Length: 69
Image 1 (cartoon, one colour):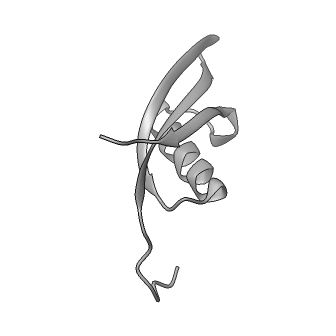
Image 2 (image 1 turned 180 degrees about the vertical axis):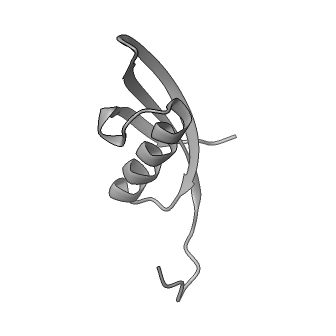
């Protein structure tokens, strides 16, 4: 990925659902991304699948919204 210009990163809270060992696991993860739906979903699925140790296809994104402190 080429970095020609600095991108404005923003924090997002992403709610997700995963089927893990025949149990439904709900949770949320905080990610820093640009405000692009495809990038947010892709980064969140990758982060969640690593965290929960499941396949990326098994991750369902319920919703995401900008996080303000």
